Length: 230
Image (cartoon, rainbow, N blue to C red; front, top):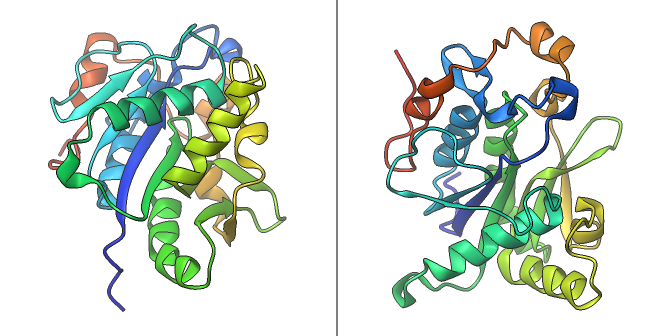
């Protein structure tokens, strides 16, 4: 069955402290010749997104069609980072791409196999919307919600961010406080798709190597060029 033409953007979170990795950015870790940020960008591109914004520090160079921003202050938490990404998308949106409804993929860059889950979520979105839900969120078989692996209604997500901001809780706010009350359909995905990299043990278990340094940004591909290294 063809996927309904719902407009979709992407916010990729790449700005955490990586404390358990000794401060080494997760975005620069490498799996199969591509950085974790590159894998996240490819996952978003594979879902047919219109625009991608990467929220985090400058890491190498990114294709010109990818937006970037940084939450203020830096390391203000995932809720603030998502709000920053939404703001960057809105600022870059010409009137001709306005749509109703619009959706946004929210994806943390530390899940190297998330592309499989993103494809499942994208395929599930039209039916969820038709059933009256406003988005979809990945869930494990044990029912654990994956807040940073979901496709959300853009207007609903913006409203949630404004609500936290009005309460003074956006900066250093938890992702749960921003996303837990959104009207989403939970979609169970294989556990390997949601496995994240928090420690060097996680990295070693997943065959993930250290950063390429200056090469990291060269392996990210935009929505119009999603291919990886060959």
